[in-house]
Length: 239
Image 1 (tube, rainbow, N blue to C red):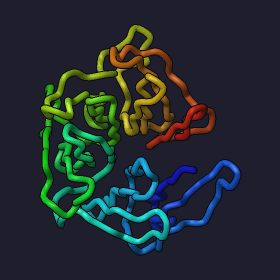
Image 2: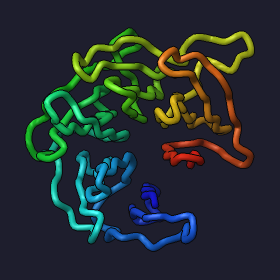
Image 3: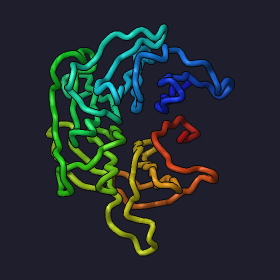
Image 4: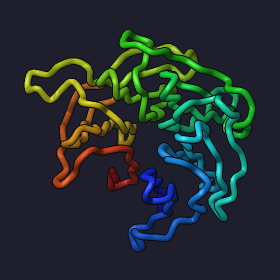
Protein backbone atom coordinates (compact mmCIF):
# COMPACT_ATOMS: atom_id res chain seq x y z
CA UNK A 1 0.00 0.00 0.00
CA UNK A 2 1.00 3.66 -0.34
CA UNK A 3 -0.28 7.02 0.89
CA UNK A 4 -0.78 10.12 -1.23
CA UNK A 5 -1.60 13.69 -0.21
CA UNK A 6 -4.14 15.83 -2.00
CA UNK A 7 -3.14 19.49 -1.46
CA UNK A 8 -5.67 21.24 -3.72
CA UNK A 9 -8.20 23.33 -1.74
CA UNK A 10 -11.13 21.63 -3.46
CA UNK A 11 -9.93 18.26 -2.18
CA UNK A 12 -10.17 19.42 1.45
CA UNK A 13 -6.53 18.51 2.19
CA UNK A 14 -6.93 14.80 2.70
CA UNK A 15 -4.70 11.72 2.82
CA UNK A 16 -5.63 8.68 0.83
CA UNK A 17 -4.17 5.21 1.52
CA UNK A 18 -4.02 3.39 -1.81
CA UNK A 19 -3.62 -0.18 -2.94
CA UNK A 20 -3.35 -1.45 -6.50
CA UNK A 21 -6.44 -3.58 -5.94
CA UNK A 22 -8.39 -0.59 -4.53
CA UNK A 23 -6.83 2.55 -6.03
CA UNK A 24 -9.55 4.95 -4.86
CA UNK A 25 -9.67 4.20 -1.16
CA UNK A 26 -11.35 6.68 1.15
CA UNK A 27 -9.32 9.29 3.05
CA UNK A 28 -8.43 8.30 6.60
CA UNK A 29 -7.86 11.75 8.10
CA UNK A 30 -10.38 14.46 8.78
CA UNK A 31 -10.34 17.20 6.16
CA UNK A 32 -9.85 20.12 8.57
CA UNK A 33 -6.50 19.13 10.07
CA UNK A 34 -3.75 20.01 7.55
CA UNK A 35 -3.82 22.89 5.07
CA UNK A 36 -2.23 22.25 1.66
CA UNK A 37 -0.26 19.12 2.62
CA UNK A 38 2.68 18.31 0.37
CA UNK A 39 5.60 16.11 1.41
CA UNK A 40 5.03 12.78 3.14
CA UNK A 41 7.38 10.42 4.97
CA UNK A 42 6.39 7.02 6.35
CA UNK A 43 8.26 5.31 9.18
CA UNK A 44 9.90 1.98 8.36
CA UNK A 45 7.39 0.10 10.52
CA UNK A 46 4.51 1.88 8.69
CA UNK A 47 3.12 3.11 12.00
CA UNK A 48 3.76 6.87 11.71
CA UNK A 49 3.11 9.26 8.84
CA UNK A 50 4.88 12.64 8.73
CA UNK A 51 3.12 15.38 6.78
CA UNK A 52 4.39 18.75 5.51
CA UNK A 53 1.45 20.96 6.49
CA UNK A 54 2.53 23.73 4.16
CA UNK A 55 0.03 26.55 4.72
CA UNK A 56 0.08 26.02 8.50
CA UNK A 57 3.91 26.24 8.45
CA UNK A 58 4.50 23.07 10.40
CA UNK A 59 5.14 19.34 10.09
CA UNK A 60 2.70 16.98 11.74
CA UNK A 61 3.00 13.33 12.70
CA UNK A 62 -0.03 11.03 12.54
CA UNK A 63 -0.63 7.45 13.65
CA UNK A 64 -1.46 5.37 10.59
CA UNK A 65 -3.82 3.02 12.39
CA UNK A 66 -6.42 5.66 13.28
CA UNK A 67 -5.22 9.02 11.91
CA UNK A 68 -4.57 10.50 15.36
CA UNK A 69 -2.14 13.44 15.47
CA UNK A 70 0.70 12.54 17.84
CA UNK A 71 3.31 15.29 17.39
CA UNK A 72 3.96 18.58 15.62
CA UNK A 73 6.83 21.00 15.05
CA UNK A 74 6.86 24.24 17.02
CA UNK A 75 5.26 27.33 15.53
CA UNK A 76 7.51 29.04 12.94
CA UNK A 77 10.18 26.32 13.15
CA UNK A 78 9.64 25.99 9.39
CA UNK A 79 7.88 28.23 6.89
CA UNK A 80 6.05 26.69 3.93
CA UNK A 81 7.54 23.17 4.18
CA UNK A 82 7.57 20.86 1.15
CA UNK A 83 9.71 17.71 0.90
CA UNK A 84 10.37 15.38 3.84
CA UNK A 85 12.86 12.56 4.31
CA UNK A 86 13.56 10.20 7.21
CA UNK A 87 17.16 9.16 7.82
CA UNK A 88 18.85 7.08 10.51
CA UNK A 89 21.84 9.20 11.47
CA UNK A 90 24.94 8.27 13.41
CA UNK A 91 24.22 6.99 16.88
CA UNK A 92 20.82 5.54 15.86
CA UNK A 93 19.24 9.00 15.87
CA UNK A 94 16.18 8.96 13.58
CA UNK A 95 16.13 12.31 11.81
CA UNK A 96 13.36 13.98 9.84
CA UNK A 97 14.77 16.40 7.28
CA UNK A 98 12.45 19.10 5.94
CA UNK A 99 12.61 21.43 2.94
CA UNK A 100 11.98 24.73 4.73
CA UNK A 101 11.02 26.24 1.39
CA UNK A 102 10.25 29.85 2.23
CA UNK A 103 13.49 30.14 4.19
CA UNK A 104 15.54 28.36 1.48
CA UNK A 105 17.14 25.88 3.85
CA UNK A 106 17.00 22.27 5.05
CA UNK A 107 16.07 21.68 8.68
CA UNK A 108 16.62 18.46 10.63
CA UNK A 109 14.47 17.38 13.58
CA UNK A 110 14.53 14.46 15.98
CA UNK A 111 11.76 12.42 14.34
CA UNK A 112 10.68 11.13 17.74
CA UNK A 113 10.40 14.64 19.23
CA UNK A 114 9.18 17.03 16.53
CA UNK A 115 8.11 19.69 19.03
CA UNK A 116 11.72 20.12 20.21
CA UNK A 117 14.01 22.66 18.58
CA UNK A 118 15.63 21.65 15.27
CA UNK A 119 18.91 19.80 15.63
CA UNK A 120 20.48 21.05 12.39
CA UNK A 121 19.80 23.60 9.66
CA UNK A 122 21.81 24.37 6.54
CA UNK A 123 21.51 26.35 3.32
CA UNK A 124 20.55 29.94 2.54
CA UNK A 125 19.02 31.80 -0.39
CA UNK A 126 21.09 32.05 -3.54
CA UNK A 127 22.46 30.25 -6.59
CA UNK A 128 26.02 29.52 -5.47
CA UNK A 129 27.26 26.21 -4.07
CA UNK A 130 25.76 25.70 -0.63
CA UNK A 131 22.80 27.96 -1.39
CA UNK A 132 19.20 27.07 -2.24
CA UNK A 133 16.38 28.62 -4.22
CA UNK A 134 12.85 27.28 -3.60
CA UNK A 135 13.77 23.76 -2.43
CA UNK A 136 10.94 21.32 -3.11
CA UNK A 137 11.71 17.60 -3.22
CA UNK A 138 14.03 15.83 -0.78
CA UNK A 139 15.47 12.31 -0.80
CA UNK A 140 18.04 10.30 1.15
CA UNK A 141 20.78 8.51 -0.78
CA UNK A 142 23.03 6.67 1.66
CA UNK A 143 24.57 9.32 3.92
CA UNK A 144 23.63 12.13 1.52
CA UNK A 145 20.55 14.30 1.04
CA UNK A 146 19.42 15.28 -2.45
CA UNK A 147 17.37 18.47 -2.83
CA UNK A 148 15.37 19.46 -5.91
CA UNK A 149 15.72 23.23 -6.33
CA UNK A 150 12.90 24.66 -8.38
CA UNK A 151 14.46 28.12 -8.54
CA UNK A 152 17.98 27.03 -9.48
CA UNK A 153 16.94 24.33 -11.99
CA UNK A 154 19.17 21.73 -10.38
CA UNK A 155 19.47 19.15 -7.65
CA UNK A 156 22.03 19.77 -4.93
CA UNK A 157 23.67 17.02 -2.88
CA UNK A 158 24.43 17.53 0.81
CA UNK A 159 26.26 15.52 3.42
CA UNK A 160 23.91 14.53 6.23
CA UNK A 161 26.92 14.43 8.57
CA UNK A 162 28.42 17.87 7.94
CA UNK A 163 25.55 19.76 6.29
CA UNK A 164 27.88 20.77 3.45
CA UNK A 165 26.90 20.84 -0.21
CA UNK A 166 29.20 18.43 -2.05
CA UNK A 167 27.99 18.77 -5.68
CA UNK A 168 25.07 19.54 -7.97
CA UNK A 169 23.22 17.43 -10.54
CA UNK A 170 21.32 18.37 -13.68
CA UNK A 171 22.47 21.97 -14.01
CA UNK A 172 24.94 21.55 -16.88
CA UNK A 173 23.52 22.07 -20.37
CA UNK A 174 23.55 18.99 -22.62
CA UNK A 175 24.21 18.96 -26.35
CA UNK A 176 20.70 17.71 -27.14
CA UNK A 177 19.06 20.46 -25.07
CA UNK A 178 17.49 18.09 -22.54
CA UNK A 179 19.38 19.72 -19.69
CA UNK A 180 19.57 21.72 -17.53
CA UNK A 181 16.57 20.64 -15.51
CA UNK A 182 13.40 22.70 -15.88
CA UNK A 183 11.78 23.53 -12.56
CA UNK A 184 12.60 20.25 -10.76
CA UNK A 185 10.08 19.40 -8.08
CA UNK A 186 10.24 15.78 -6.95
CA UNK A 187 13.42 13.77 -6.38
CA UNK A 188 13.92 10.16 -5.34
CA UNK A 189 16.85 7.77 -5.02
CA UNK A 190 15.59 4.32 -6.02
CA UNK A 191 16.92 1.21 -7.78
CA UNK A 192 20.42 2.70 -7.76
CA UNK A 193 19.28 5.71 -9.79
CA UNK A 194 18.31 9.32 -9.14
CA UNK A 195 14.85 10.19 -10.46
CA UNK A 196 13.72 13.80 -10.84
CA UNK A 197 10.30 15.14 -11.85
CA UNK A 198 9.73 18.57 -13.38
CA UNK A 199 6.81 20.91 -12.74
CA UNK A 200 6.75 22.61 -16.13
CA UNK A 201 3.66 22.52 -18.37
CA UNK A 202 4.99 19.42 -20.12
CA UNK A 203 6.17 17.38 -17.16
CA UNK A 204 9.23 15.17 -17.58
CA UNK A 205 10.85 12.44 -15.52
CA UNK A 206 14.64 12.69 -15.78
CA UNK A 207 16.81 9.70 -14.82
CA UNK A 208 20.42 10.10 -13.65
CA UNK A 209 23.08 7.58 -12.69
CA UNK A 210 24.07 7.56 -9.02
CA UNK A 211 26.33 8.73 -7.49
CA UNK A 212 27.92 10.15 -10.66
CA UNK A 213 24.79 12.11 -11.62
CA UNK A 214 25.15 11.46 -15.35
CA UNK A 215 21.92 11.87 -17.37
CA UNK A 216 20.64 8.52 -18.64
CA UNK A 217 17.09 9.04 -19.87
CA UNK A 218 14.35 11.65 -20.19
CA UNK A 219 10.77 10.38 -20.07
CA UNK A 220 7.71 12.42 -21.04
CA UNK A 221 4.69 10.43 -19.81
CA UNK A 222 1.77 10.73 -22.19
CA UNK A 223 -1.00 13.01 -20.97
CA UNK A 224 0.99 14.39 -18.02
CA UNK A 225 1.36 18.08 -17.24
CA UNK A 226 3.36 19.33 -14.25
CA UNK A 227 4.72 16.44 -12.19
CA UNK A 228 5.19 16.60 -8.42
CA UNK A 229 6.30 13.95 -5.95
CA UNK A 230 6.73 10.25 -6.60
CA UNK A 231 7.05 6.88 -4.89
CA UNK A 232 8.45 3.58 -6.10
CA UNK A 233 8.18 -0.08 -5.27
CA UNK A 234 10.19 -3.02 -6.61
CA UNK A 235 8.64 -2.74 -10.06
CA UNK A 236 6.87 0.58 -10.56
CA UNK A 237 7.34 4.33 -10.23
CA UNK A 238 4.25 6.38 -9.35
CA UNK A 239 4.23 10.11 -10.20
